[in-house]
Amino acid sequence: MTIPVVPKDSGKNVARQLGETEVSYYLPSRENGVNDMYLHLGFRAPVDLVTSSRVRLIWAILRQRHPLLAAKVRMNGYEDITFEYQPIQIVDDSIAEAETALEFRTQNKDDLIDSYLNGPRTLSNDRLSYLFISSPEGQSDDAETEHNWMLCTTHYIGDGMALHATANDFFTLLGNDNDEAKLRALLHSELTSNKPDGAESQLPLSIEARLPKTPNARIFEAMATVDHLLSQRKLIGGHAFPRRSGKERKTVVPTVPFDSDKTKNILKKCKANGVSISSAIFALCNIAWARTHKIGREEPMMMYSALNLRPYVPANERLNNSYWFLAIGYFNIVLPTFYPPNSTEAAIFWHRARSVKTQTAKAAKSPMLVSRSHAMAKERGLRSRIWGMQDDGVECTLKMPKQILFEDDKPAPSKALIGLSMLGNLDGTYKHATFPLVTLHTLTSGSRQRQGGMLLFGYTFVGKLWLSLGYDMNGFDDEVVQGFWKHLLAAVDELLSN
Image (cartoon, rainbow, N blue to C red):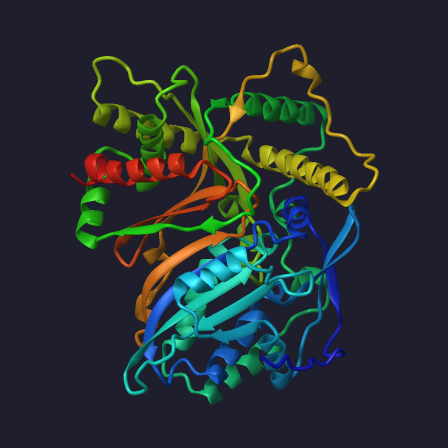
């Protein structure tokens, strides 16, 4: 497509430094887009609704509402990395700017996702977001047509919550009878709304700047340090998928929906046993691995997941200007792998699902959560700078602090089997009634991975439970992964839906 020229002197340039969590995602992404996110939605709509001119207007509106989507990154040094954003004040200039990050294609869903995950990187320091609209050729012009919508962003500007909120806003604007005149008026309103000067008013703050500050007293700092180290020492895991190397990374995303009747039975059974579907899926992974891997049962199994930090941000910061900011922490689930004698597999499964519920609640409700999040952000930021210098062949003068409190202890194994991203009930996020002219029917999400990456997604959408496994098929013993996936799907039928 032809890339339009965007005026350079549209408004006063604003900038801010990346926070530590943002840095920890930015530095590894530079070479090949590791962790660059995508959200795909398949939908049906009348043919005259998904015109290029309407899509451009809607995309321009969203980029004005959420400036990090239209920002750039400048790296002047490992301690000096900034977001830069240039406000636009003219409607046509805003449309032209949005078009530089928009592409119309005719690919099907699988080819579209594959080209993003395994092809050349789409995003860059100068392009932090990109929108694809792909409409297969040969469709009738007088009926509803099928389309693929895919939003791609770097992970350091936001998280899954921001992706889904943007999709809901996009389809709310698309799926109504808003003509182009109304959309242009809305875009004009966004451009002329009262936005005070300054980076803090236009570029959303980092999560570290939003979270409550921890006391500066030395006694609290010492307590927080000890708490962080002790919490890390509990992360014991002795299981990992067997890896292989020597081949180029090839990410695949097998995705399985369970029909609405089966999903209702699953949710009903989880409720009767006092757990969420998210807790149940962690326990299902534990059972599936036990069925796949028959040795090493004396060691526990560890899985990791992201923790949504938005509820811990003060309300005035949480709702400030834009939902596009990165707000995740991390927690781990540790479960046994052995089967106790005289216990059925079903009893073991539900007991471990309740254990997941307890561990998750303990992580989310810990009075030390904020201090742990600050400590983890500093640790991840420092580690990413060290690795970044090593990758760049630069002499590294930075060092990770020694954990002197426990230096004489023999460290326990801390291998994680798999990462899980439990998105919950997305039908609570997508207000389908607000876009009556559009029918959403398929959702897949994930990210570009490093070699040997693996992440399981679980969510409910359009009344169905979906499981989606994104992994590097050339980075693992694929026979073992396929066996695990088969056992996981079978366990849903045997332990959850019957």
